[in-house]
Image 1 (cartoon, chains in turn green, purple):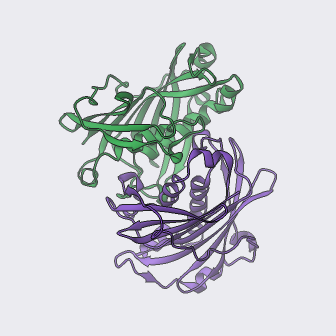
Image 2: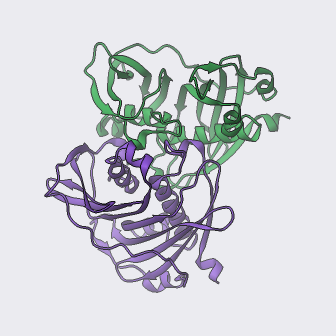
Image 3: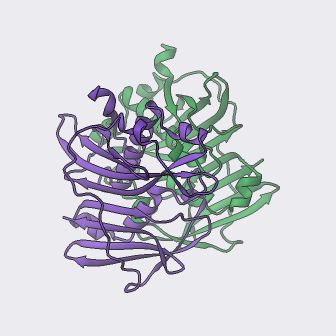
Length: 243
Length: 243
């Protein structure tokens, strides 16, 4: 039974997915997480298609990733994912990433809501059905928390949502928020440091052609609060911790 | 023997890879092609790591993709790839994409060169070793050809190369050229039409922070010539045919 609760997925890193330092960076780690979450849910009857049949869709609300090391070229990654808890409006899904020797190098926590695809409003989750798969496995990283707003005290870098930014719902894709935020740091920062924790809150949906502003401020040493705003209102907040 | 020449790869489309119309669009098709090319080469002793051991690297020079249909959600794709011909400076690699029923819905042609990783200059390929795998399979699409320069007659849309654009060599990633070019078309065009052929020539390497200009002009009905320029000189040209 434990086995059927915890999903196990295997990835082999590919050269064209590496960043300029030869590492699988946060956006690609995020892609692996979403892929595993999607497959884990689909295999248990609450995937994209199942949700779509009920005119609902999963929406990622929060994501926190902590990495002690980053995989390089041609590395085998094993990704475990499981449901920590399902409540009426939110499901907590956890992740553990291990290398070929079984050593963990990353953990992640995510919080998901379900929305009605027509009204785009939150709907109730089938808590009992989801909690059948609830697994009691430790995920030793902090839960996603409050992020200090920085949009009022920092200049905004303009960005306009493009065709390649859109997901199947016609909204700014979850991974693209992360890419655009991490693009605010320059190459020198990536050479000197590594992201030890990346945390993001998705507040509202970015749409095609929407003019956005990107904001970042160092709120404590090596800790940056970030925001993506539309007309001065945050559609996303994030926090990046460097080491 | 034919079996060992032609690589066969399987992909299952995932919801978070779809564009706003629920289709796997050209950039993701390109990602599948590169993934298959990379695995096919690695399995036969001339992959990224083998090349790297000789201080060389594959460089994609030309890519042409023709699609009659685009895969949707949860579709099984089979991708075949093979070497059509290897010469001293260039290798021609072909691709065929088929659906779950074995019906082809896309073909692609690519031209690859090898460079010395230190000098970044072209090196000779091991033609005999590569041609062991040469396969005689039809690829019924036109070879990549000349693309009309449009940068002198069109306004340039500025773009600056960002962290997320970089590949492991620290250059603008091959798929990102495609994304940035396809982002020049608006949502209305994607709703009305579909790309029937996308062709790109990679002329030189985009680097971090490089200010670029993106250009597009309709050179005949539903045919657009495009260019990515740095200081007025094209680093890439492309051609998009809509239907």
